Length: 92
Picture (cartoon, rainbow, N blue to C red):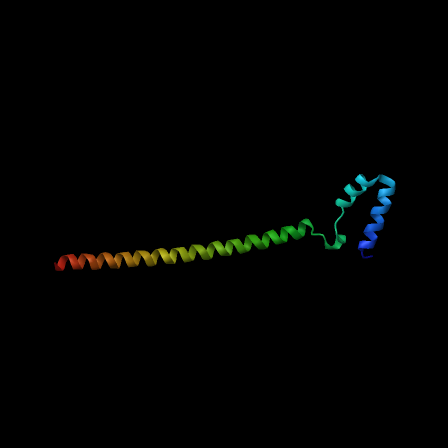
């Protein structure tokens, strides 16, 4: 059975008759706004967490690779410039 807004309204009205407005509102706030089939379970959250962790690991590995690549490029450029400067100093 699908829970409709009309079902929820009628439930609230009945709860209000039996429990009073404040208690009815408190109870309704603890019910999911949709059917229980649409509520995420701990297993669902664990699967999402595992997926996020996997993506984070891949991203870290990619960053590490790019950082090493850039570091070696900078070192090579500095070594080249140092060689040029040393050669120019010897020519003068």
